[in-house]
Figure 1 (cartoon, rainbow, N blue to C red):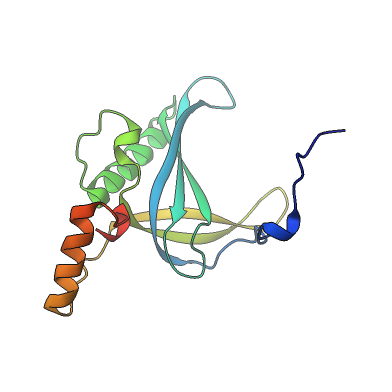
Figure 2: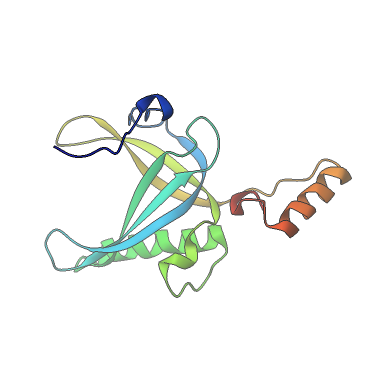
Length: 159
């Protein structure tokens, strides 16, 4: 038995299902990253966790794996191209650590892919673009945005 310290499910919203999200483009940010060894043990990959920042799927997470160290030169070339696209999308051209890419908004292209082992659909991140510049519609909106930015209350993806 495990002590649940008086947990009350009436006070917590239940998690939604983990069905894949529809293919499309989503505003997201990298919220976690970790280097992991490949299954074969002869290389490593950078696993990036993306969190969707707005819309119906706000808060959902997707993952991308970049094979930056691998005996397969093609896999490394693809991973480096993806990393370059991510760096350009968040305007960090020479990150020293993957954490330099965290919490910066970008648009990810999400595809649906059929898993070969089960036939189930899953999501795959297949592209990275900069967040589109949003124009401020009035001067009062601009002053509000400036005051929020000055106080630090604006989330990084809305700056």
